[in-house]
Length: 197
Image 1 (cartoon, rainbow, N blue to C red):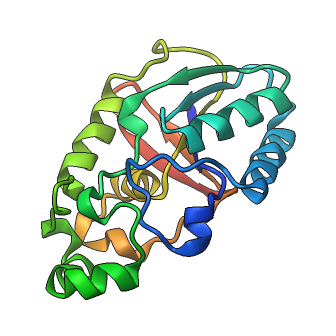
Image 2: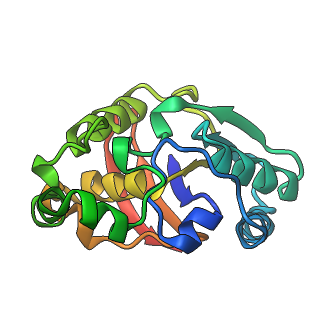
């Protein structure tokens, strides 16, 4: 089955370079326009099912895509929520560097061994995503594609899973808004990368 991931539309925090994580800023006007554009591109797929992170920037993106697709169904799944950046949420990288310079270096040099203060590790988020892939909210054998509206961190993890790459390579992937990451999903939870679209 075809499973695509897309990052939510931009927020003001994206534009300001702030760590968002589990904080919940809304879409900005440009982010809403991006979401509508994705929906217009997907409008021909009558069997599309959307599954969204419950955070409002993702849920609003999914709702705008669904409307542009003529009312596609949308499910909410907390396992698609962004990595919990803990105490860094709402801060810019410059602010983090002032307060936690050594921790920021560790995050950049060895992300696979890092836990955000008061938040998650990549291993925690990887486990959530693996559970989503192995126990999906859609019925096994369903016809039609699924679009997961999620976050940059979770999409990076999906790409690493599909390409059998280690968590140490997490920071090497860029995930812009509006790009569809296409995978082939199988019932055992395996992913095979089909490529950005």
